[in-house]
Amino acid sequence: MMFATEDELRLVAEGLMRRTLPKPAWTHAAHVAAAVWITARCPGVVPERDMPGFIRAFNTATGVANSDSGGYHATITLAALRATAWFLAARPAVPLPEACNALLASAVGRRGWMAAHWSDALLWSVAARRAWVAPDRAPLPWGP
Image 1 (spheres, one colour):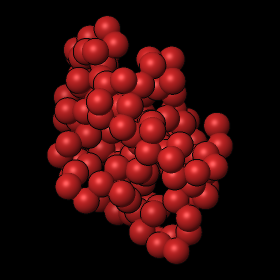
Image 2 (cartoon, rainbow, N blue to C red):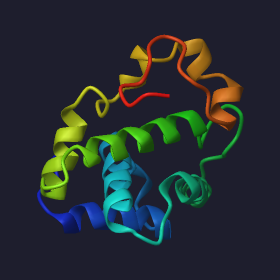
Image 3 (cartoon, rainbow, N blue to C red):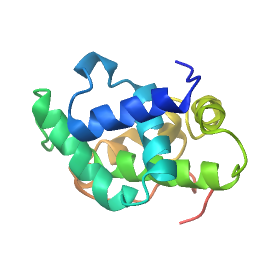
Image 4 (cartoon, rainbow, N blue to C red):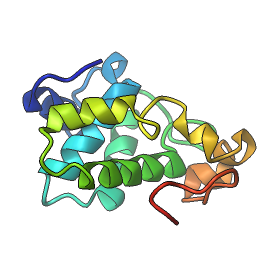
């Protein structure tokens, strides 16, 4: 999915935060769009602190259990948020929809990018689902 306007990004992020986004619309691109909008345009929100609550509440509202085997995943969420902040910081003058689309096409924005950094066993472990777990395959481009 390509985003053409900031309003498209805002609607995804607000849908997540208000728990009104239709569940089928919560795609990989929507995850990235919400992270981009919240990181760039929500000064009262601290993404690493607040996004876990938004995602857990959205999951609950859409019938997805947050458990040791499904729903919210701490390491994936934190890695994605850190990738988003790092990516946007390097492009301060790029219009937000263009930056979001570039992130989606980048090495740290494509679906499955974390497999280059975490083994499946570690990334899908209960420990990684519950809290941040550092990668075991390759360092992250922004450092520890």
